[in-house]
Every structure is written in structure tokens, then in C-alpha cells.
Length: 118
Image (cartoon, rainbow, N blue to C red; front, side, top):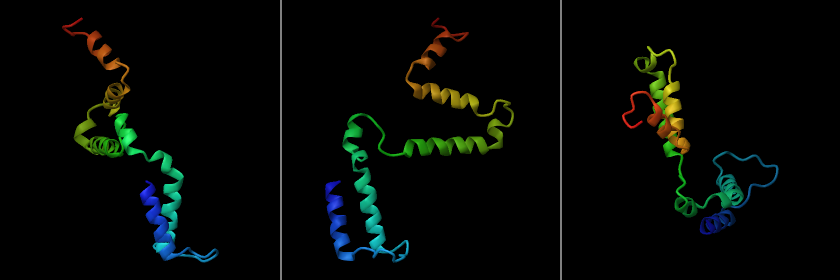
């Protein structure tokens, strides 16, 4: 992150600053560099991908975005939930049980009627 900030600072020296009171275009390089420097400087402590990977944390929103897309496709498809009065609620409950990591799904499966392992 330090290298990126250093390069942005060099770039800002080259392109200059937007003078106070001057309105700039949203694509003005001076404005873009200043906004990038401000954002990265303010959020530098939250941008530690190697530490997050070591902790097993996701470093992108790809998984959530994929799930939202899948959910929207299922919700909007008439043949998926058209004949179910409770709609997508069972899928949401199942997904919450899987993600909760409190073993509620395992307990449910072990205690449900018809489970051969009870």
C-alpha cells in the first residue's frame, strides 16, 4: 500500500491540485488523484489482504455477489417459487444455518423424523 500511495503522491505533484473554489470535472486527473489519495490514506488500515487471507477471511465480495445473483434469479423465476406459499424463506433459513457455524444444521439433520442415525 505504501508504494501505491507514494506513486499517487508523485502523480499529484505532476498533475497538480485543483485550486480552491475551482469547479472541476469528475474526470479531471487532479481530482481523481486527490480522491484516490484521500480514500486510500483514510482506509489503509483496512486494506491488509495478506493478513485477511491468513485468517481465512474473504478479500472480495465475489461470493456474496454470486449468492445475491442466484437468489434474485430464483426469486424472479415464476417456476421456482410460484407454487410455494412460503416463497424463498426455506432457502434463506437453510443458507443461514450453513453459514452460522453453530452446528444447528447438523442438529436438525440428526433430530429430524426419518433420520437413520438417531
